[in-house]
Image (cartoon, rainbow, N blue to C red; front, side, top):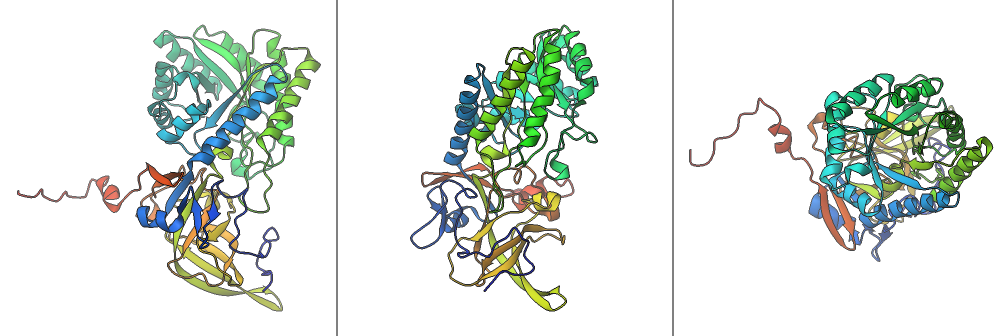
Length: 471
């Protein structure tokens, strides 16, 4: 067999369609002596038998290890230039009470962007002083709640929020720490919907208005100006965008230092992870060292103190630690014209989930890696893993080489689904959201229970309850 002409250039024909590339799969992912995929010491078949499919599986030790590695990388890099670094876990990637507790145990702070995420972080035992609150359209109730519980920093996303947060803090009789989110204008190399610092989009205050906004904050007795914030996007592999954004922020930072204290600078997150063999993710040590060098040089050039630094990784910490298990259903080979003189076959492999548990391929054209839970020596065939929803765009893995003997009933695992899959999950077509299970040291526990048909019907006010027994 050879490469299929329908395959994208990034996808190489595999010598072993069962191999697990370590940088894509959870740290504990392995093949047993029988060839079955196992994570956290538990086989895919054991997990599917116990919890059903689809099933989100999170390698607990891998998440914790990655959190500590990021914390250590930034602590050490910025200690070398004489300052401190604070790492906020971006809760939007994947947040439960237990994940929040893992981050606190790893000495990470947590970034939230809605009242719901705030409630989860607090229920997980995170000290509110170690929370950052984002959001481009915070409600008055969300702002009031954040102020009331003592959220460490609120990120101001517009000029009008300055007054709204100021009023809430004055009403509560406190001085609220705030950052100003700046739209740096850096065009990050990522999907348009993941680029968050381009001029024509909803986030932040333009760079040209940063000084005016900071002066407005400083004029409010109930606000304490902490510093600037920047986030250029997500799933980024080109470090030039991070460098340019840091330089632009340092220019404004230096201007503001001349008229008052600016103790911190938040450089955001957005580092990519490896979803496929074609990806090449940064090591956190490399990111930390590069940013520390930029900040140190910029401060030396401007003769200003080095500020404390904050960063906000989410995907990097939790993404590679998660997989999703599916049960294979219908298999449909489709023969297509590859050129004027050549035809080729793509095999459609349907699974029992889809865009309701992973919206990213439909939203961003995101690519993933898939493997059968069992090993196979069958020649690989170009496959497209698709879901059960009533949409032609319901694609889980757009292009992958799977063993040609893939069959109904097989278990199939998709790698690197720890970030943004559960967070973006829906009930489209009235499909219940899958459970999330943490695995470690041969044991599994539910982080979030799955939804049943009864759960879906329980929210429908037209459903008449059945009479109780004995009535």
